[in-house]
Length: 407
Image 1: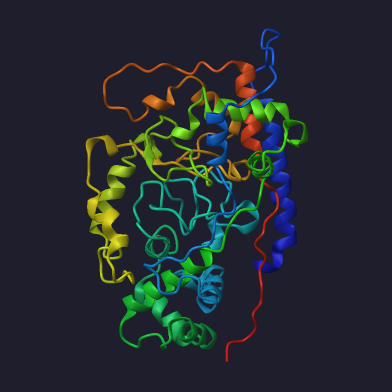
Image 2 (image 1 turned 30 degrees about the vertical axis):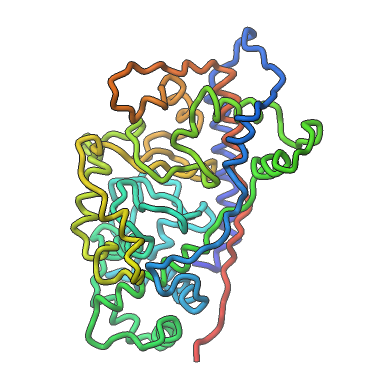
Protein backbone atom coordinates (compact mmCIF):
# COMPACT_ATOMS: atom_id res chain seq x y z
CA UNK A 1 0.00 0.00 0.00
CA UNK A 2 2.74 2.44 0.88
CA UNK A 3 4.65 1.40 -2.24
CA UNK A 4 1.91 2.98 -4.37
CA UNK A 5 2.65 6.47 -3.04
CA UNK A 6 3.69 8.07 -6.33
CA UNK A 7 0.71 6.71 -8.22
CA UNK A 8 -1.66 7.97 -5.54
CA UNK A 9 -0.03 11.39 -5.53
CA UNK A 10 -0.74 11.75 -9.23
CA UNK A 11 -4.31 10.55 -8.72
CA UNK A 12 -4.87 12.94 -5.80
CA UNK A 13 -3.47 15.84 -7.81
CA UNK A 14 -5.84 15.14 -10.69
CA UNK A 15 -8.79 14.86 -8.29
CA UNK A 16 -7.91 18.13 -6.56
CA UNK A 17 -7.50 20.02 -9.83
CA UNK A 18 -10.77 18.63 -11.17
CA UNK A 19 -12.55 19.56 -7.94
CA UNK A 20 -11.24 23.12 -8.09
CA UNK A 21 -12.26 23.48 -11.73
CA UNK A 22 -15.72 22.11 -10.99
CA UNK A 23 -16.12 24.47 -8.07
CA UNK A 24 -15.46 27.52 -10.21
CA UNK A 25 -17.69 26.22 -12.99
CA UNK A 26 -20.63 26.00 -10.60
CA UNK A 27 -20.25 29.48 -9.16
CA UNK A 28 -23.00 32.00 -9.87
CA UNK A 29 -22.10 34.49 -12.58
CA UNK A 30 -21.20 37.90 -11.19
CA UNK A 31 -23.29 40.67 -12.73
CA UNK A 32 -21.82 44.00 -13.90
CA UNK A 33 -23.46 45.63 -10.86
CA UNK A 34 -21.13 43.65 -8.61
CA UNK A 35 -18.26 46.11 -8.48
CA UNK A 36 -15.19 44.96 -6.50
CA UNK A 37 -13.74 47.54 -4.12
CA UNK A 38 -10.27 48.05 -2.70
CA UNK A 39 -9.81 45.98 0.45
CA UNK A 40 -8.92 47.53 3.79
CA UNK A 41 -9.05 45.93 7.23
CA UNK A 42 -9.99 47.61 10.48
CA UNK A 43 -8.11 46.97 13.73
CA UNK A 44 -10.86 44.61 14.91
CA UNK A 45 -10.73 42.71 11.61
CA UNK A 46 -6.96 42.39 11.84
CA UNK A 47 -7.37 40.97 15.33
CA UNK A 48 -9.72 38.33 13.94
CA UNK A 49 -7.32 37.54 11.10
CA UNK A 50 -4.46 37.03 13.54
CA UNK A 51 -6.60 34.72 15.68
CA UNK A 52 -6.40 32.13 12.90
CA UNK A 53 -2.73 31.50 13.53
CA UNK A 54 0.09 31.04 13.81
CA UNK A 55 0.24 27.73 11.99
CA UNK A 56 1.21 25.05 12.73
CA UNK A 57 0.27 25.19 16.39
CA UNK A 58 2.86 24.08 18.96
CA UNK A 59 3.00 20.31 19.35
CA UNK A 60 1.49 18.94 22.54
CA UNK A 61 1.05 15.49 24.06
CA UNK A 62 -2.20 13.93 25.25
CA UNK A 63 -2.19 13.38 29.04
CA UNK A 64 -4.86 10.68 28.65
CA UNK A 65 -2.54 8.59 26.47
CA UNK A 66 0.73 7.40 28.00
CA UNK A 67 2.05 6.60 24.51
CA UNK A 68 1.43 10.10 23.12
CA UNK A 69 4.54 11.60 21.55
CA UNK A 70 6.64 8.44 21.99
CA UNK A 71 8.60 7.51 18.87
CA UNK A 72 8.22 3.77 19.53
CA UNK A 73 4.42 4.10 19.80
CA UNK A 74 4.28 6.21 16.64
CA UNK A 75 6.19 3.51 14.75
CA UNK A 76 3.87 0.79 16.04
CA UNK A 77 0.78 2.86 15.22
CA UNK A 78 2.05 3.57 11.71
CA UNK A 79 2.54 -0.11 10.97
CA UNK A 80 -0.87 -1.07 12.30
CA UNK A 81 -2.61 1.77 10.44
CA UNK A 82 -1.60 0.23 7.10
CA UNK A 83 -1.94 -3.43 8.16
CA UNK A 84 -5.08 -5.16 6.79
CA UNK A 85 -4.57 -7.99 9.28
CA UNK A 86 -6.06 -5.68 11.89
CA UNK A 87 -9.45 -6.33 10.28
CA UNK A 88 -11.38 -9.54 10.90
CA UNK A 89 -11.10 -10.77 7.30
CA UNK A 90 -7.67 -9.30 6.53
CA UNK A 91 -9.17 -7.27 3.67
CA UNK A 92 -9.17 -3.66 4.84
CA UNK A 93 -7.01 -1.40 6.96
CA UNK A 94 -7.40 2.07 8.47
CA UNK A 95 -5.78 3.39 5.28
CA UNK A 96 -8.60 1.95 3.16
CA UNK A 97 -10.75 4.92 4.11
CA UNK A 98 -8.05 7.33 5.27
CA UNK A 99 -5.78 7.51 2.22
CA UNK A 100 -2.64 9.66 2.75
CA UNK A 101 -2.63 11.13 -0.74
CA UNK A 102 -6.30 12.13 -0.43
CA UNK A 103 -5.70 14.22 2.67
CA UNK A 104 -6.41 11.14 4.82
CA UNK A 105 -9.94 10.67 3.52
CA UNK A 106 -11.35 8.74 0.54
CA UNK A 107 -13.31 11.27 -1.58
CA UNK A 108 -16.35 8.99 -1.43
CA UNK A 109 -19.82 10.07 -0.38
CA UNK A 110 -19.76 7.55 2.47
CA UNK A 111 -16.89 5.43 3.75
CA UNK A 112 -16.59 1.77 2.78
CA UNK A 113 -14.80 -0.79 4.94
CA UNK A 114 -16.22 -4.30 5.17
CA UNK A 115 -19.47 -2.57 4.15
CA UNK A 116 -20.66 0.99 3.50
CA UNK A 117 -21.22 3.17 6.55
CA UNK A 118 -23.73 5.99 7.05
CA UNK A 119 -21.39 8.96 7.07
CA UNK A 120 -18.69 10.68 5.07
CA UNK A 121 -15.09 9.84 6.00
CA UNK A 122 -13.53 12.80 7.85
CA UNK A 123 -9.88 13.69 7.37
CA UNK A 124 -7.35 12.71 10.03
CA UNK A 125 -5.39 15.92 9.61
CA UNK A 126 -4.92 18.20 12.63
CA UNK A 127 -6.75 16.05 15.18
CA UNK A 128 -4.32 16.29 18.06
CA UNK A 129 -5.95 19.29 19.76
CA UNK A 130 -9.60 18.29 19.24
CA UNK A 131 -12.05 17.99 22.14
CA UNK A 132 -14.51 15.58 20.50
CA UNK A 133 -14.17 13.04 17.70
CA UNK A 134 -16.54 11.77 15.03
CA UNK A 135 -19.39 13.64 13.35
CA UNK A 136 -21.54 13.17 16.47
CA UNK A 137 -18.80 13.52 19.06
CA UNK A 138 -19.08 9.88 20.06
CA UNK A 139 -15.53 9.80 21.46
CA UNK A 140 -13.73 12.13 23.86
CA UNK A 141 -10.16 11.11 23.00
CA UNK A 142 -8.30 10.26 19.83
CA UNK A 143 -7.32 6.83 21.18
CA UNK A 144 -10.93 6.00 22.04
CA UNK A 145 -12.03 7.11 18.58
CA UNK A 146 -9.33 4.89 17.07
CA UNK A 147 -10.95 1.82 18.66
CA UNK A 148 -14.38 2.42 17.14
CA UNK A 149 -13.66 1.50 13.48
CA UNK A 150 -11.69 -1.56 14.63
CA UNK A 151 -14.76 -2.93 16.42
CA UNK A 152 -17.47 -1.62 14.07
CA UNK A 153 -18.88 -4.58 12.06
CA UNK A 154 -19.08 -2.42 8.92
CA UNK A 155 -15.53 -1.13 9.11
CA UNK A 156 -12.77 -3.49 10.32
CA UNK A 157 -15.20 -5.83 12.16
CA UNK A 158 -12.52 -7.08 14.56
CA UNK A 159 -12.77 -8.16 18.19
CA UNK A 160 -10.46 -7.45 21.14
CA UNK A 161 -9.26 -11.07 20.98
CA UNK A 162 -8.46 -10.84 17.27
CA UNK A 163 -6.40 -7.68 17.75
CA UNK A 164 -4.61 -9.01 20.82
CA UNK A 165 -3.75 -12.31 19.12
CA UNK A 166 -2.35 -10.50 16.08
CA UNK A 167 0.00 -8.48 18.26
CA UNK A 168 1.01 -11.45 20.42
CA UNK A 169 1.70 -13.77 17.50
CA UNK A 170 3.59 -11.36 15.24
CA UNK A 171 7.22 -11.07 16.32
CA UNK A 172 7.72 -7.54 14.99
CA UNK A 173 4.43 -6.17 16.37
CA UNK A 174 5.05 -7.78 19.73
CA UNK A 175 8.58 -6.34 19.88
CA UNK A 176 7.36 -2.84 19.00
CA UNK A 177 4.52 -3.12 21.50
CA UNK A 178 7.03 -3.94 24.25
CA UNK A 179 9.21 -0.97 23.30
CA UNK A 180 6.22 1.38 23.18
CA UNK A 181 4.57 0.33 26.44
CA UNK A 182 7.42 -1.17 28.47
CA UNK A 183 5.86 -4.63 28.77
CA UNK A 184 4.91 -7.43 26.33
CA UNK A 185 1.25 -7.64 25.29
CA UNK A 186 -0.76 -9.30 28.04
CA UNK A 187 -1.31 -13.02 27.48
CA UNK A 188 -4.78 -12.91 29.04
CA UNK A 189 -6.24 -9.38 28.96
CA UNK A 190 -7.41 -8.85 25.38
CA UNK A 191 -9.11 -5.54 26.13
CA UNK A 192 -6.00 -4.00 27.67
CA UNK A 193 -4.01 -4.90 24.55
CA UNK A 194 -6.75 -3.47 22.32
CA UNK A 195 -6.73 -0.16 24.20
CA UNK A 196 -2.94 0.05 23.92
CA UNK A 197 -3.23 -0.48 20.17
CA UNK A 198 -5.76 2.37 20.05
CA UNK A 199 -3.27 4.57 21.87
CA UNK A 200 -0.48 3.64 19.45
CA UNK A 201 -2.75 4.45 16.49
CA UNK A 202 -3.60 7.78 18.12
CA UNK A 203 0.11 8.54 18.62
CA UNK A 204 0.62 8.12 14.89
CA UNK A 205 -2.40 10.24 13.96
CA UNK A 206 -1.23 13.06 16.22
CA UNK A 207 1.70 13.55 13.84
CA UNK A 208 -0.58 14.33 10.87
CA UNK A 209 -0.47 18.11 10.53
CA UNK A 210 -1.29 19.97 7.32
CA UNK A 211 1.25 22.30 5.74
CA UNK A 212 1.29 26.07 5.56
CA UNK A 213 -1.07 27.73 3.10
CA UNK A 214 -1.26 31.04 1.19
CA UNK A 215 -3.51 32.34 3.97
CA UNK A 216 -0.90 31.48 6.62
CA UNK A 217 1.75 33.45 4.76
CA UNK A 218 -0.62 36.40 4.43
CA UNK A 219 -1.62 36.21 8.09
CA UNK A 220 2.02 36.21 9.20
CA UNK A 221 2.77 39.20 6.96
CA UNK A 222 -0.05 41.08 8.68
CA UNK A 223 1.35 40.04 12.08
CA UNK A 224 4.71 41.54 11.08
CA UNK A 225 2.99 44.83 10.17
CA UNK A 226 4.15 44.57 6.58
CA UNK A 227 2.53 47.15 4.26
CA UNK A 228 -0.36 46.00 2.04
CA UNK A 229 1.78 46.59 -1.05
CA UNK A 230 3.97 43.64 -0.02
CA UNK A 231 1.10 41.20 0.61
CA UNK A 232 1.34 38.36 -1.87
CA UNK A 233 -2.37 37.62 -1.56
CA UNK A 234 -4.95 38.32 -4.25
CA UNK A 235 -7.61 40.99 -3.83
CA UNK A 236 -10.45 38.47 -4.37
CA UNK A 237 -8.99 36.35 -1.54
CA UNK A 238 -8.79 39.45 0.67
CA UNK A 239 -12.38 40.38 -0.13
CA UNK A 240 -13.43 36.80 0.65
CA UNK A 241 -11.55 36.92 3.93
CA UNK A 242 -13.30 40.16 4.84
CA UNK A 243 -16.66 38.44 4.24
CA UNK A 244 -15.52 35.39 6.21
CA UNK A 245 -14.67 37.39 9.34
CA UNK A 246 -17.40 40.02 8.84
CA UNK A 247 -20.68 39.82 6.95
CA UNK A 248 -20.55 36.04 6.66
CA UNK A 249 -19.91 35.55 10.41
CA UNK A 250 -18.15 32.32 9.48
CA UNK A 251 -15.91 32.59 12.52
CA UNK A 252 -18.96 31.82 14.67
CA UNK A 253 -18.13 28.17 13.92
CA UNK A 254 -14.82 28.20 12.06
CA UNK A 255 -12.56 29.94 14.57
CA UNK A 256 -8.94 29.58 15.65
CA UNK A 257 -5.83 28.37 13.82
CA UNK A 258 -7.54 25.14 12.71
CA UNK A 259 -10.68 26.99 11.50
CA UNK A 260 -13.07 25.09 13.78
CA UNK A 261 -14.38 25.62 17.28
CA UNK A 262 -14.71 21.84 17.62
CA UNK A 263 -18.38 22.03 18.62
CA UNK A 264 -21.70 21.00 17.08
CA UNK A 265 -24.31 22.84 15.01
CA UNK A 266 -27.37 22.08 12.91
CA UNK A 267 -26.95 24.01 9.67
CA UNK A 268 -29.27 22.01 7.44
CA UNK A 269 -26.36 20.85 5.28
CA UNK A 270 -26.67 17.24 6.51
CA UNK A 271 -29.97 15.96 7.85
CA UNK A 272 -30.64 12.40 6.90
CA UNK A 273 -29.07 8.99 7.24
CA UNK A 274 -29.42 6.47 4.37
CA UNK A 275 -33.00 5.51 3.46
CA UNK A 276 -34.14 9.02 4.36
CA UNK A 277 -34.16 8.54 8.13
CA UNK A 278 -33.25 11.57 10.27
CA UNK A 279 -29.72 11.35 11.64
CA UNK A 280 -29.72 12.21 15.38
CA UNK A 281 -26.10 13.36 15.19
CA UNK A 282 -24.79 14.77 18.47
CA UNK A 283 -27.78 13.47 20.43
CA UNK A 284 -26.87 9.87 19.66
CA UNK A 285 -23.16 10.65 19.94
CA UNK A 286 -23.55 11.82 23.54
CA UNK A 287 -25.57 8.74 24.45
CA UNK A 288 -22.94 6.38 23.03
CA UNK A 289 -20.11 8.40 24.57
CA UNK A 290 -21.55 8.15 28.07
CA UNK A 291 -22.21 4.42 27.65
CA UNK A 292 -18.71 3.67 26.36
CA UNK A 293 -16.28 1.76 28.52
CA UNK A 294 -13.47 3.59 26.72
CA UNK A 295 -14.45 7.16 27.57
CA UNK A 296 -12.30 9.35 29.78
CA UNK A 297 -14.42 8.52 32.83
CA UNK A 298 -13.44 4.87 32.44
CA UNK A 299 -10.46 2.82 33.61
CA UNK A 300 -8.14 3.48 30.65
CA UNK A 301 -7.59 7.22 31.03
CA UNK A 302 -3.88 7.73 31.81
CA UNK A 303 -4.45 11.22 33.21
CA UNK A 304 -4.45 10.58 36.95
CA UNK A 305 -5.35 14.20 37.73
CA UNK A 306 -8.84 13.66 36.33
CA UNK A 307 -8.79 17.10 34.71
CA UNK A 308 -9.12 15.76 31.17
CA UNK A 309 -12.38 13.96 32.04
CA UNK A 310 -14.15 17.09 33.23
CA UNK A 311 -15.68 17.97 29.87
CA UNK A 312 -17.08 14.42 29.58
CA UNK A 313 -18.44 14.62 33.11
CA UNK A 314 -20.33 17.80 32.26
CA UNK A 315 -21.84 16.76 28.93
CA UNK A 316 -25.55 15.94 28.91
CA UNK A 317 -28.30 15.12 26.44
CA UNK A 318 -30.50 17.98 25.33
CA UNK A 319 -33.27 18.26 22.76
CA UNK A 320 -31.22 20.79 20.85
CA UNK A 321 -28.49 18.22 20.25
CA UNK A 322 -30.66 16.33 17.75
CA UNK A 323 -29.35 16.77 14.21
CA UNK A 324 -26.22 18.65 15.25
CA UNK A 325 -22.87 17.68 13.71
CA UNK A 326 -19.29 18.57 14.43
CA UNK A 327 -17.87 21.65 12.75
CA UNK A 328 -15.10 20.40 10.42
CA UNK A 329 -11.80 22.16 9.97
CA UNK A 330 -11.55 24.21 6.77
CA UNK A 331 -7.87 23.45 6.29
CA UNK A 332 -7.23 21.53 3.05
CA UNK A 333 -10.97 21.48 2.33
CA UNK A 334 -10.30 21.61 -1.43
CA UNK A 335 -8.97 18.04 -1.08
CA UNK A 336 -11.83 16.59 0.96
CA UNK A 337 -14.88 16.66 -1.34
CA UNK A 338 -17.67 15.61 -1.19
CA UNK A 339 -18.87 17.66 1.77
CA UNK A 340 -21.26 17.36 4.70
CA UNK A 341 -21.83 14.60 7.19
CA UNK A 342 -23.54 12.49 4.53
CA UNK A 343 -21.29 13.55 1.64
CA UNK A 344 -24.22 14.78 -0.45
CA UNK A 345 -22.67 18.11 -1.42
CA UNK A 346 -20.33 17.55 -4.34
CA UNK A 347 -18.53 20.89 -4.62
CA UNK A 348 -17.28 23.72 -2.45
CA UNK A 349 -19.30 26.17 -4.56
CA UNK A 350 -22.49 24.35 -3.51
CA UNK A 351 -21.46 24.65 0.15
CA UNK A 352 -20.99 28.41 -0.28
CA UNK A 353 -24.38 28.72 -1.96
CA UNK A 354 -26.01 26.83 0.90
CA UNK A 355 -24.69 29.27 3.48
CA UNK A 356 -25.21 32.36 1.32
CA UNK A 357 -28.83 32.65 2.49
CA UNK A 358 -28.40 31.54 6.12
CA UNK A 359 -27.84 33.62 9.24
CA UNK A 360 -24.87 31.87 10.93
CA UNK A 361 -25.24 33.90 14.12
CA UNK A 362 -28.77 32.49 14.57
CA UNK A 363 -27.83 28.86 13.96
CA UNK A 364 -27.58 28.09 17.65
CA UNK A 365 -29.43 31.00 19.19
CA UNK A 366 -32.32 30.03 21.45
CA UNK A 367 -33.82 33.45 22.17
CA UNK A 368 -36.53 33.30 19.51
CA UNK A 369 -35.23 36.29 17.57
CA UNK A 370 -35.74 36.08 13.77
CA UNK A 371 -32.85 35.28 11.47
CA UNK A 372 -31.42 37.78 9.02
CA UNK A 373 -30.21 35.89 5.95
CA UNK A 374 -26.80 36.84 4.60
CA UNK A 375 -28.01 37.31 1.01
CA UNK A 376 -24.48 37.14 -0.36
CA UNK A 377 -24.22 38.50 -3.89
CA UNK A 378 -22.74 36.49 -6.74
CA UNK A 379 -19.44 38.35 -6.45
CA UNK A 380 -19.35 37.87 -2.68
CA UNK A 381 -19.90 34.14 -3.10
CA UNK A 382 -17.09 34.00 -5.66
CA UNK A 383 -14.72 35.96 -3.41
CA UNK A 384 -15.57 33.76 -0.42
CA UNK A 385 -14.76 30.66 -2.45
CA UNK A 386 -11.44 32.16 -3.56
CA UNK A 387 -10.55 32.81 0.08
CA UNK A 388 -11.54 29.30 1.17
CA UNK A 389 -9.27 27.83 -1.50
CA UNK A 390 -6.31 29.66 0.06
CA UNK A 391 -6.75 27.50 3.17
CA UNK A 392 -5.48 24.48 1.27
CA UNK A 393 -2.08 23.27 0.24
CA UNK A 394 -1.36 20.49 -2.22
CA UNK A 395 1.80 19.41 -0.40
CA UNK A 396 1.61 16.39 1.87
CA UNK A 397 4.16 16.78 4.68
CA UNK A 398 3.82 13.14 5.74
CA UNK A 399 6.24 10.64 4.23
CA UNK A 400 6.24 6.87 4.87
CA UNK A 401 9.37 5.56 6.53
CA UNK A 402 10.74 2.09 7.01
CA UNK A 403 12.39 1.93 10.41
CA UNK A 404 13.72 -1.58 9.88
CA UNK A 405 13.36 -4.57 12.13
CA UNK A 406 12.64 -4.40 15.83
CA UNK A 407 15.20 -6.34 17.86
